[in-house]
Length: 291
Ligand SMILES: NC(=O)c1ccc[n+]([C@@H]2O[C@H](COP(=O)([O-])OP(=O)(O)OC[C@H]3O[C@@H](n4cnc5c(N)ncnc54)[C@H](OP(=O)(O)O)[C@@H]3O)[C@@H](O)[C@H]2O)c1
Image 1: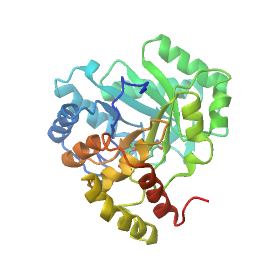
Image 2: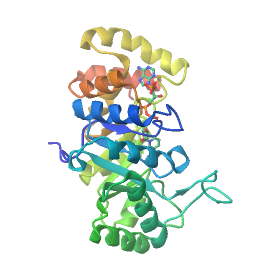
Image 3: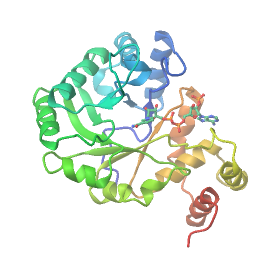
């Protein structure tokens, strides 16, 4: 049974809505938000760094003008990566998980997104210098003040989560997972999500399929020729259906800002691949059948 039904199965990733990609206008962002809600995508994934710390501002302006009820959407954001760039005076890219920085970063996200609370707040990447007690203090304070509802991580290994959980429960983990980036199926990450009933999210759920023109893509394409007809679907839907069939019940964070492709993504959730077809896709991606 799906546990995290308060988040949409397909999550809209906003990383390329602004200056890191499509450079959508306020009007276009508003229209895209409404479109997402119309097709049952209610969860939006952010990070403080997107657009060199500007994406949340642009989304917030659009959200503020959209007349969308805050309670009808869920906002995810992340903290911890300290980029070098125009907007921050950092000497070197690094991570910061001090109590003060975590609290400050969450408050910045709230201000920029023009909202009172984040539904889910994630530590973006594990830091070797992260101290579980400090993280726990920051998160407990944010929660007590009503500024965040859920707390999770991104790109963490099971042992890094276990370390944090000596001080504070971790509700979810957002990781790279796709047919062409499947390491998390074998290194314990998805086992941890499943065993501990965490909210699992996959970034870059389409993997390298549309990005690389190599032998791996060629092999997958060949298999897809038949499957597209068999399942009456397209390539990106097959990639998403494959991912969603994993028992860890992963929610794909899709990166497209194209309305039709967003709609296709939602439809992918109703495709059920036959067992052997799932393994045939895996074999095409890995270049060999399972041992
Ligand atoms: N936690 C983390 O560390 C982390 C890291 C990276 C990303 N993220 C999150 O994950 C989200 C998604 O990442 P992603 O953008 O890499 O995901 P993705 O959904 O795997 O890739 C999206 C890209 O594929 C293209 N695409 C989709 N369907 C296509 C098709 N049928 N034909 C050709 N191209 C197609 C899209 O182009 P169009 O836009 O033109 O459709 C877009 O450029 C981000 O927005 C962000 O929220 C998180």
